[in-house]
Image (cartoon, rainbow, N blue to C red; front, side):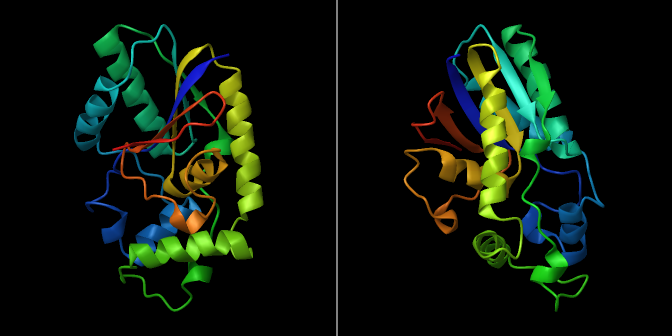
Length: 211
């Protein structure tokens, strides 16, 4: 099958914060551990989805694959509805455990943190990405194995556009797995904003940032 593949992060979660960077430690911990599984802010995310969908090329087939988290499934549903509205095309949505976020225990990464403390998001990124290489969180090899599952699932989709909706850290692993992405170092991968990410081809040779 020949595919044009888009990997994007989910929409903004329906919590009273502008982004993850403003969330206190206890909220980030609950998100990371799955104790908190919020939906998305529909009004905010709709604008981002409209902008993304407006840039998609014409295609007979469009498929969406999403992480099982509520925020990713909600984003996939919004994508499906928006594509149907703009292009008149029905979109199949598949949920895959392989697209779950990288597994890490925030309390182990920040044993000294206070519940209401706001963690510096750059430092959090560094600790998680470094931990993937040292084994203090889910290892890079484990995450890469899941990415290979995603690639295999993409191969089963009809020729056309495939949109994968996932989380920032697992998307960074995908970036490293793409052949000509410009980096093989997790610490050099880009931060993915809401409904942002990158585009690649069926051979995972090309890499183009989506903003």
